[in-house]
Structure formats: C-alpha cells, structure tokens
Length: 316
Image 1 (cartoon, rainbow, N blue to C red):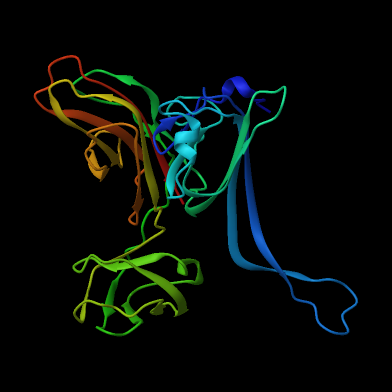
Image 2 (cartoon, one colour):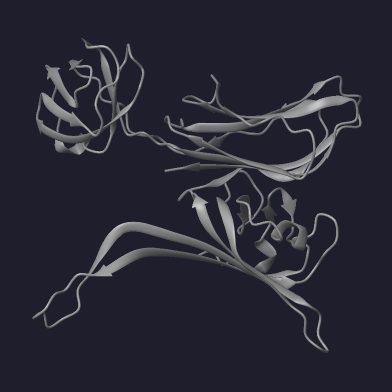
C-alpha cells in the first residue's frame, strides 16, 4: 500500500486561483449514495434501498486570507466554480479530484488570541469524474507552443459491428440482420454510422431486436452500425497566472489517440486572455486510450509570455 501525506498534496485550484499555499490545513472529500428506508408495516428489520442518486462534497479548513488571488477572493462568490485538487502528486496520470462546485457554506472565524480561521464546503453541480487524473501538471510554461507527454489509460473493449441494423425515424425499435445482440449490450451506445448520432440501448429482446432509450431522430435507414461502451467524461482547466506579453491569448487543447501517434482534437478550451481562469467541458463521445495536452500562445508572442495552468481529464 502506498501511503500519502500532506506533502503529496500538489495543488488546489478554485476558479483557477491557486490557494493551497493560502493557509489551507485540511481538505475532506465526502461521497454519499442516497438511501431510502423501504421496509413497511409488519417488517421486523429495517431495509434500505439505493435511490440511484449520489452526493459529493468537498470541505476545507484553513487560515483567513484576504489578499489578491487569495482564498477569500475565491470563496466569496456563490457562483459555481471549477475545483481541481491534486491529492497525490503533480505528474501526468496522478489522481485528480475535479468538479464544478457550488459553495454552500463559507465561514470566517475570528477568535481572540488566535489567527483568524476560515472554512468552506462545496457540493458538486457537475462531476466529479470517478477516474479523473492530471493531463497537464500545474507548472509555469513559457514556450510559444508545445505539448505534454501522452497518458495511457489502458486498452478498451472493441466496438461491436457485426451485421447491419435498421433504424426508423421516431421509433425506439432497432432491427438487426445477422446480428448477435445480447443482454451485455444493454446500457451501451449504438449509432447508425451514416447518421453519426449515438443512442443508449434500453433493452435487448433477442439477437436481432433491441430498444433505444429515446426515439431515433434521423431519417429511416439501414446499414453499418456501431455498438460501443462509450467512455465519456469531462476535461478541466485551471489557469492561475498568465502573462501574454505580445501574444493575443492562450489556447489549450486536449487531444486523444487510439495508437499514441495519430492525434485528434478531443476538446479545446475557451481562449484565455487573463488569469485566474477555469473551465469544465463535458465530453459525450468516447475518450480514446491515449490523451495529451497541447497549448499555443496565439498572435505574435514576444518571448516573455508565461502561463501557469493545469489540465484534468476524467473518464466514466
């Protein structure tokens, strides 16, 4: 078992502000599966059932700080903010807690004979991704353009494409020809290749008949199709410092690949012109096995540009 200590906590970004050095002493993660008591009259034992809802909360404690870019500046807004916590290091592939969170509690605690304290709690309104990790470590970058090393997420299950499938506009029913669909396909995504839109599989009646969770929205057609175990998720950006010099902005892109050599754009963040800045972008299509982060100072960088940022990638 690998043991971790406070020295392993690499960064905490709140809305892009790097607040770990602002006197934070404790950060807690809390995950809860919501249960409801389901026993009835006459039952001798309590029985509980999971309602399918999850809650996630982050709490922090520390010293009160009201300077520019400080913890107080980060916490005094009630708007949702992107949180990025690196509890186990600052290398590509290290674990990352990443979410968009709403501050529900912010307490400032003056006390006689003590330094003032502050604590806060956040509840996730988007995320967290269950397997998020660092795609670009938090560090200062000065190159006009560059890329990180790639991150290997491991092999994924091959898509199922045997036979052909017939889709009908406005219908949830899909009929296969020479297909062998099974219960294992329930919950996965299917698309008519010529149409391109993905639909979730609700049920499989037999080898050649399945139902979608929503009606097919394209034109009635039959042909090649793909069933895939979609690995969607989200990407996160936190920019804590930025000097553009003569550049126009900073553009940061997450790319993915099936073979670590042929790269396609997965997501491009909104161009950054000032710091602090943060953003979360949802990914609905499959995130491929390999990922990396590229960046570019656009315009005419004069050589004194610098940006301190981190990127997180979450798959689910």
